Figure 1 (cartoon, rainbow, N blue to C red):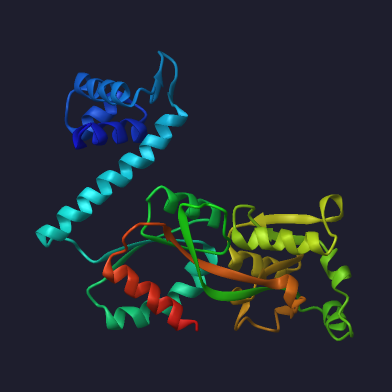
Figure 2 (cartoon, helix red, strand yellow):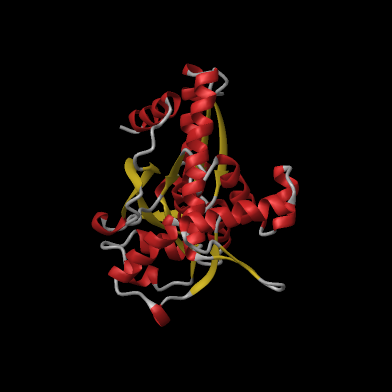
Length: 296
């Protein structure tokens, strides 16, 4: 196999069309078809299933797609370094809390020390970011959950915790003054939660499960991916919420009340993730070191 064949295959998977792939790569459709046929013969595996109505990538095809991306990225990185053309860019995938509350704290101080580095930042839920880093879509990711993906390094850099927030009404102020605070009663209230792919959402569900609040006993009024919207809806009286403490630091106590949760249940970690075995560029390593030291 050669690099041209790999580029052809990646284009076919990306555009799910031999015709469009040929246009994007700048070669003829028969050449694209020949490249795919040669790859399938060499690998002794069917990569693409194509009929008049359907176009599907086989399981082996997806596996090879990830390998092809990694091979071409290594080649392109090497050529850029050797030709002195490599820009100092860090491609970061970030989940919601790091995007809204951590990067705004960290990036200005890093930029003052490394003005020749620029960032390309995409925001999504933790599960989606983990999948994208696994496939080589980002240099690093910042997420609020970890998986058992053995192809990735999960490096802790920030310890957070979950808190419960309510509207700042007299009813909740009375409950806040009680000793002990009636957490079971509070957690039985109508609740606004994060989307299920988020680290915060997953941690909230784990916490509720440990406290015996699951299934039909849980009253969810809404699921949202934006903590700012969640805070505003809670302040407006739609329900209570389990949310990252980082997201409510400095919030107006006249609008929201914050209730502490047992530390053994509420603590959570944020992770820097990257591909295991991938040689990080110097400026990426410097950013990782800066991020870890910033929150030590």
